[in-house]
Amino acid sequence: MAPSAKHFMFLSFFSLIISFSIAQTSFRPKALVLPITKDVSSSTPQYITQIKQRTPLVPINLTLDLGGGYFWVNCEDYVSSTSKPALCASSQCSLFGSHGCSDEKICGRSPSNTVTGVSTYGDIGSDIVSVQSTDGNNPTRIVSVHNFLFICVSNVLQKGLAKSVQGMAGLGRTKVSFPSQFSSAFSFKNKFAICLGSSPSTNGVLFFGDGPYNLNNDESKALIFTPLITNPVSTAPSSFLGEKSSEYFIGVKSIKVSDKNVKLNTTLLSIDKNGFGGTKISTINPYTIMESSIYKAVANAFVKELRVPTVTPVAPFETCFASKDISFSRMGPSVPSIDLVLQNDVVWNIIGANAMVSLDNDVICLGFVDAGSDFAKADQVGFVAGGSKPITSITIGAHQLENNLLQFDLATSRLGFRSLFLEHDNCDNFNFTSSV
Ligand SMILES: *[C@@H]1O[C@H](CO)[C@@H](O)[C@H](O)[C@H]1NC(C)=O
Ligand SMILES: *[C@@H]1O[C@H](CO)[C@@H](O)[C@H](O)[C@H]1NC(C)=O
Ligand SMILES: *[C@@H]1O[C@H](CO)[C@@H](O)[C@H](O)[C@H]1NC(C)=O
Image 1: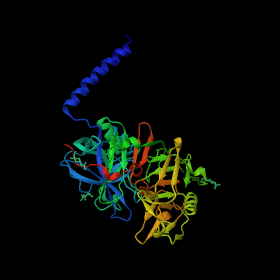
Image 2 (image 1 turned 180 degrees about the horizontal axis):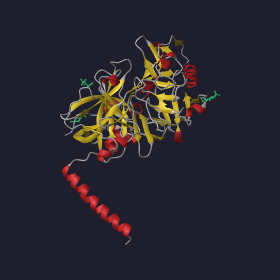
Image 3 (image 1 turned 120 degrees about the horizontal axis):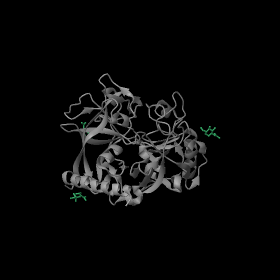
């Protein structure tokens, strides 16, 4: 027997003993679950989750940021007997790619409030975090991570977030985002799934780990897959030179309205060496924002296919109709289909409920925003300073994600997606009654 094989056998025997002793002393969850609440108390909806942190444990509400790199909290009233600062040059600091070091020898980074685009420096620390595990059907036992990393900031960063919120939970492509930390703490696959509900009175759901994801049915089986793309240049409001984007990009190759190809400048659909262009997914932007020429082409095709007169638009939208002219079905307003044709030649079909936004005053609008509009320009987040050219050509926003199950697989770099309306299901259907 070769020495290397002997060595391997010894190692696997050894790790068997270790995992056996872990199994005896502590429960190892396969997946975790968190509720998502749609908060409509601020100017734009925010999707909020709640974890417990600190000793003694306190509930902390956090705005979810799908592409956010970090977990940051307002430390103004931080009381805990288990919090530990990350000392400069520690492995924790390097996980953050931190270059900063305070007089107290604590490392830090500048996380962003991606709702407002404001960034501020904060110390990196760790503390206990406690969440519910799941078998995919219900929440099960509560589990804890003892040294969960976060950035501690002053309360200036919180401005612009929903009232009950104390920070943001980044789910993005970094080593310290929620999915990365949970998967490494419990050694499950670095996958997570998000399902945003459309109503403030019910809960959507966030899973860390693999399926089943049981809503009415196990919807992990309904997913369609497309590759995730890495943008080589950070798209965050604050970053270091050479850092990749922590946001999730997918490859939109073309757009169809009523099965007809919309003529677009396809250069805008790919990401160039400076990180411009392409398509990303965001839970922070309430509606899909499209570069001006793309928006105009899609909106024109849509109006032509719908054959209904437009009415005076209501900001931030530019393409609106009288509600009485539109019929409704189980899938929402009956309007021409809008398809994003993706890499692998799979199609993301944006159904009526996701394509349209009903406003109070009998008006219904195409729920996409023109990046060249005054509304989008006033909101400088994601734009070249002073200009109207968006860094990213298409940002798929939260309204278009509601009642879609999205699974992000970081190990294989692919996105699974499915509109649950097509499965006669929706994101509110997870049973949050604990089964233990
Ligand atoms: C957190 O959010 C929940 C549900 O939206 C709310 O009931 C609770 O009061 C919030 N907590 C804090 C500390 O504001
Ligand atoms: C297409 O977009 C690229 C990138 O913004 C731009 O440089 C080019 O001029 C555009 N082409 C046309 C025909 O508008
Ligand atoms: C939710 O789960 C609980 C615990 O397993 C179960 O008793 C209850 O019947 C479930 N509710 C529904 C509506 O299925």
